[in-house]
Image (tube, rainbow, N blue to C red; front, side):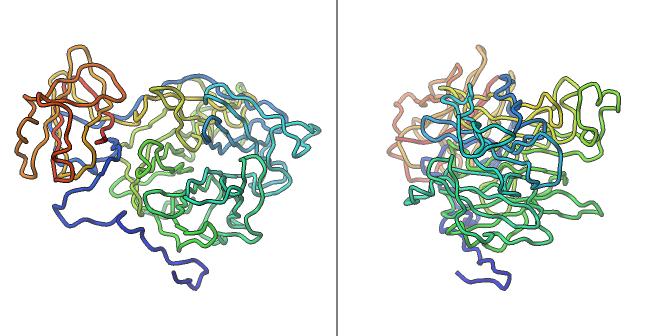
Length: 486
């Protein structure tokens, strides 16, 4: 590891991850769960398409109505730690400069991710209240965008199980640690990520321990000028110790047209941590929907109704490339003028499981209004996207894969008339004996985890470790994920 002249360390890729395999080499997936949020494993498709998930509005999770919260509460993070869920967010009732002294960091708790309460804490007296749910106050500018995560690095000290980054352009990013997620302290006095002119830092700066890459990863806001337009962009850095960070690299979106992404919300998907997902805020500056009379009617701050925003899905498998497989909104603003104001509809960081077959994400709504709140949206597990076939049917084939395990498990949904069949092929695309489409026991129904079987049974132990292609044949069906397992 070498120190650069700007004080950053040179990034060293983790062995075996993000590495380009030789052309035509099989993709080693082991027993990982694979989602259809990108085409990383797809060799060919016929009569099927990628389908974006459909979040279900599950109502208000938390009304932001305490005197220390209010209409400008924002930048939320949801973390599940065993049997407890924690929701972190900025509280501030009036608009002001980024990092102003009125900003505080709040925490709500839940035992199911659905019903939330405020823990009765006595850490700080805020606006005359000695009992509240404030975990950080009087520490400007760090409550502006305090962004915590649960550190899953093996061997992490008990007192540093929770970590966070916070700061604004002028200060750079400071590191915080906590044993319980409630009482926090600075890891070191100086900024671990120094200020630079091109770094914005004014929204959530999302960090986590990457099991797949073997180091801490940080995604943060920068700017990128394209055809004379200065776009809100995303850059990435890595660290072995959460203190010394690599020289940042700008993220690429491939051929996707540039858009303002105000937050990135990138984190490992909890059921497939090698895939980082982000339900992030797409900001449309100057795209005004409300007139002054409509804005006055809903009580929005006069400075916050001349733009609009929604949520989009971005993903990455590490490195400096995002995939925007879907340019369409993942979550539209919806009915009601209150949803079409500036900086509303900003998703919280992280998806969490909230039922046997469901997961949730949360969205800050009604920004700048007396009715500001956090709303919960529900999806089926792995339901960010799927590969879908209509009634006429279709099929797709993977690239050659090398798997571990003895069974193939699917997460799928069909109509009563639909179904799914699976064929395992050799590297040349020839059906393996006893594993052809005609041998397969068709799947009909709607299940999160269903083991596939052929006429010869379920076990695939005999071919584990050898390259195979998987052909999926679908009719009026969605396939959300698959994995090989024991």
